[in-house]
Image (tube, rainbow, N blue to C red; front, side, top):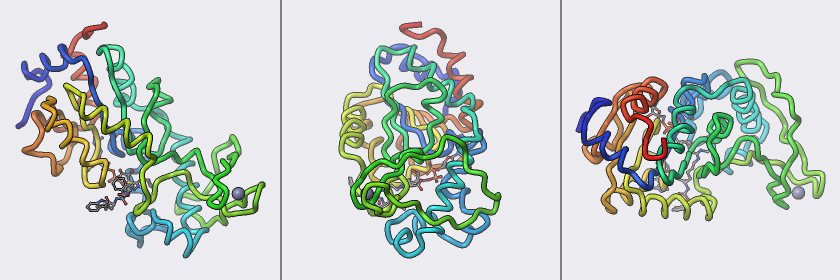
Amino acid sequence: MKSGYCDGNLLTALREARRVLVLTGAGVSAESGVPTFRDSLVGLWERYDPAELATPEAFRRDGALVWGWYEWRRMRVMKARPNPAHLAIADMADRVPSMTLVTQNVDDLHERAGSRNVVHLHGNLAAPYCERCKRPYELPPAAPDLPEGGVCIEPPRCAGCSGLVRPGVVWFGEDLPQAAWQAARDAAARADVFLSIGTSSVVQPAASLIGIAVGAGAVTIQVNPNPTPLEGLVSHTLKGPAGTVLPELLRAWGPGARG
Ligand code: BV8
Ligand code: ZN
C-alpha cells in the first residue's frame, strides 16, 4: 500500500504510538557517503560477493584482504557525518513514550546523531577483538589513511595472547549477539508502530522482525527509494531517500505526544 507523508492513517498511528520500533539498514548511511554493504565492493574487492567476503572462511583464507576491507570501510565511516535521516531518527525518540532503535549497520552514525541505546544486530566496525581470547583491541584514534581502491593490511595481533584480531562485526554464518537479538524480538512483539528504514530486508534473521510486528498487529511503515520484499506486507511504503522522507514525515507528524 503506497502512502504519502500526509496519509491520515499513518500520521494518526504515529501520533498515537506508545512503543515504536525503528529498524535501519545500510540505506540510512548511504547519504552520509558510507557505501552500502554491496556498494562497498570496489577496487581490490570488486570481484567478490559481499556474502562471501564477510565470512570467517574469507578471513581465514586471506586475513589481509578482509582486514583491509574493514579498515577501508572504517576510514569511510570516520570521515562521514550523520545525515538528516540519522538526525530525524534521533529526533523521533523525543516524540514517543518509548522508541527502540535496532540497526543492521556497523557504523556509529546513529550514536553520533544523538541516538542512545542503539541495538547493533551485526556488531560494530569500531570494536575489533582477538579471535582467540576475545580481548577487545584498542584501535588508534586517527582514521586510517588508505588509498581509495583499498589495500591489503595484515590483521594486528592481540597483546595478550598474540592471536589474530578480527573485525567486531557479525559475519554470515555467525550467530547474532544474543542480548541484541532478544531485545530486537521483544521490541518487535510489543511495537504498535514498526518503521523499516533503508534496508533491502533480505538478510536473516533481521528481516524476520517485521513478521513478528505484523503478527502482533503493529502498523508497519517502510522507507526506501527502491522496491523490497516487504511490498504488500507493510501498511505503508514511503518511496524515497530517507534523508528527504524522514524530515518531511516529522514535519507532517508535528511535535508528537511528548513534543
Ligand atoms: C545467522 C556485518 C544463525 C558484516 C552483516 C534464511 C534464509 C536464507 C539465508 C539465511 C537464513 N538464515 C540465515 C541465513 C544466512 C545468512 C543470510 O541471511 N544470508 C542472506 C545473504 C540471505 N544470515 C546469517 O548468516 C546471519 N547469521 O543466521 O546465524 C542464526 C539464526 C537465527 C537466529 C540467530 C542466529 C548473520 C547475518 C549478518 C551478516 N552481517 N553485516 C559487514 O557489514 O561486513 S549483513 C550486511 O548485509 C548488512 O549489515 C546488512 O544488514 C545486509 C545487507 O547490506 P546492504 O544491502 O548494504 O544493506 P541493506 O540490505 O540494508 O540494503 C540497502 C538498502 O538501502 C537497499 O534496499 C536500498 O534500496 C536502500 N537505500 C539506498 N539508499 C537509500 C536507501 N534507503 C533509504 N534512503 C536512501 N538514501
Ligand atoms: Zn588474544
